[in-house]
Length: 411
Ligand SMILES: Cc1cc2nc3c(=O)[nH]c(=O)nc-3n(C[C@H](O)[C@H](O)[C@H](O)COP(=O)(O)OP(=O)(O)OC[C@H]3O[C@@H](n4cnc5c(N)ncnc54)[C@H](O)[C@@H]3O)c2cc1C
Image (tube, rainbow, N blue to C red; front, side, top):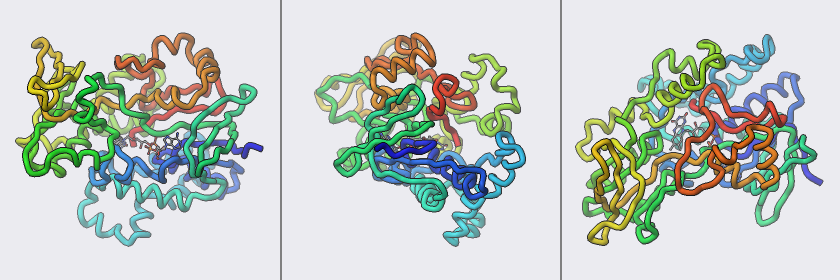
C-alpha cells in the first residue's frame, strides 16, 4: 500500500528546507494539517556540503545567508493575517537564530557579516530540516520514476537501501539544478573533460607540481564557482574562461532584488516575455556575483575570452584539448591541457529521467502542445534554452495538473 502525503518534494536541499519550514509553521499554528514528505537520494543538503560534486564546500555563497529559508517573510501576501503568524514562526528557522544557536552570531556580525561558504550554508539547511518536523517526514532514497494515478495524484517510485517503495502525493516539487548540459567532444579526450557537477576530488588529476592550462567554458555561477575552487586547488595553473558575452556582474541593486522578493512591485505578470527574459538574463543567467568577480578580476592567472565553444577535439600534439572557438572574429582552435564544461545545467533532465513516457506525453498535452519539439526533451548535444523563466514567473503546470511545480530560485 503506497504511503500517502499532501506534498512530496524530491530532494532535501534549499527548497525543501524552505517548504518544510512553512509546513512546520502551518501545522504548529493549527492551520494544517499538511503532510510533507521529503525524499533525498544522497544526503541532506548534498549540493552544498562538498562531497557530491558541484562544489568543494569552500566556495563562497553568492547571496547573503540572511536571505534564509523564510525570506522574504511576506506570507501575508498569500495568507493574509495568518501570514504574519507564519512568518513569526519561520523566524525560528532564520540564519540569525541558527548562528545564535551555534554561538557564532556576534562573531559573524563583528566580522562584517562576511560571505559564507557553501558548506556553512549546507550545515544551516541541515539544522533547519532537523527541526522543521511538524507534519514533515523524510525518506532516504532515490526517486526513480514518477507517474500519475487517475490523472489526479502523483505516484513516486523510490529506490531505498536496495528495495523500492511507492509513495503518492497530491502535489509534487522537483528540486535541484538538474545535470550538466551536453558538451560535444571527441571521446579520446574524455579524461581531460570535467563538468560543473564533477566531484571536486576528480580534479586531483591536474598536475600539482607543474603549471597547467585549464579552459573553463561558461559564463555563470558554476563557472565562477569552479574558477574560485581551482585557483586555490592548483595555484600554479592558468585559467581561461570562455563566455558568450563579456563577463558581467549580477545585478544586485535594490530594484533587481525587489523583483525577486516581490515581483508584483513591478507588475511582473503584466510585463511582456522579452522584458522578463532580459531581466532574468541580466540578473541571474550567465552573470557573476560581484564579490567573487572582484576576487578574480585582478588575478593574472585568470583571463576571459568572449565567444562560444562548439566542439572539443584532441590537441594537435595529442596531449591536451583543442577547442572550436566561434566569435565575431571567426573560428579559432585554441589549445589547453584540460577543459571544464560550465555551460550550465539541463533543467529538463530530471523530467526526462523521472517521468514515464505516457506522463510526459500527458504533461506535454496539458502544459504546452509541441513542448517536445521545442523544449529540448531530446539531448542531441545541441543546447537549447530551457523554457523556464527562473525568477518570478515560474514554469508551472499547476494550471493543468494539480500540485506540480518545477524549480525556480535565486535566493
Ligand atoms: C555551484 C553552484 C553555486 C550556487 N550558488 C548559489 C548561491 O550562492 N545563491 C543562490 O541563491 N543559488 C545558488 N545556486 C543555485 C542553487 O542551485 C539554487 O539557488 C537552489 O539553492 C537550489 O535549491 P534546490 O533545493 O532546488 O536544489 P539543491 O539544494 O541542489 O537540492 C537538490 C537535492 O535533490 C537531491 N536529488 C536530486 N535528484 C534526486 C532524486 N532523483 N531522488 C532523490 N533526491 C534527489 C540532491 O541530492 C540534492 O540534495 C548555485 C548553484 C550551483 C550549482
